[in-house]
Image (tube, rainbow, N blue to C red; front, side):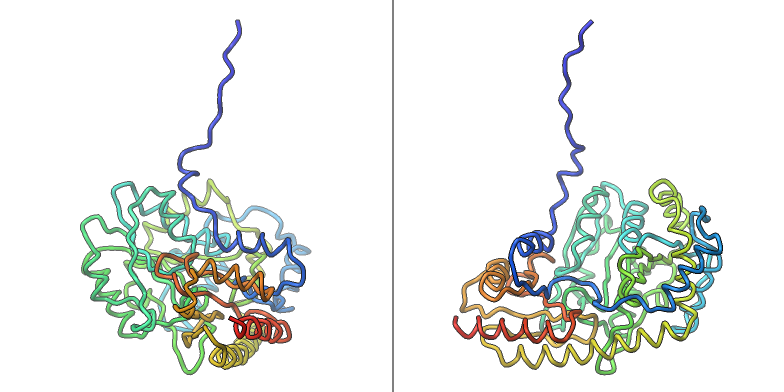
Length: 392
């Protein structure tokens, strides 16, 4: 008996996902010579030596086996200690899950909390993964605009107008990617109170917490709404450990239980010796000295880039107080979209910047510039940009 040949199709949910415009631009640049990238959101520093040595030592000591799904207990204790020491926030290790970067933490939170009839409120502009994770969860997506006149903070008055009976999750990401904005304590408290009043969860993504400038402070959301917050964090930015894929989430116990259940079928556990290195990252003063050195270098670069951009034609930077990005406005008289402008800079200056629309419709008319690039390359890229823009 012969069977008719079947046609195979991808699951429909995959077609919902939009390919990152960031990656599209990188692929175009890869086929060009003498290009300098100010696009990637990755520290150009190496992981501190003390952390690398801890990982090597852990391998030699036999940390090459499975760990508990939630993570090695001592590592979760070190994370809890960190929040107590840095923020005077009481966190139980039982409320922590170790994840493969903050990416996985966000995915687990969305899949654990959101269903088809739920809505998630996501800032615009915002980092690219939130919208795509919400699509996979089949949730409704509402965008709250971040406005220049409000220094790109979430406006609590606008937020409350978006909340309905369907609202389940609100995404907060500060210091913000892509704008570099930070939240005031007053705004953090207002958002936390709203979450408690309307019984919604806040996914607070906080990987840039240590890169702050001009006296700015970070206020972790769990201090103000611990029963309504899923805090996602990562070692990638703080300790220049992007390739290690090490992050964590802190959440109420029932949410953590569900996240662990899903995590167990996706990852199982984060690499054992990398978790041991994470303990050293949090507890060894040498790793924190390295973090402070990175912050100082970023602060110098930030100052340099702002000064240069302020003296260039056709572009106006927003002055950020966090992260390692400059969010810059394109002169409307150029009559170029963000994508047009980014492609024009690549073709005419050999410099990669990210079009603002990669982060949402509100990003139209803006570009994101990363200064996580060594100073010599940064200066050369700025020189090229100025020369090209002066000819427009």
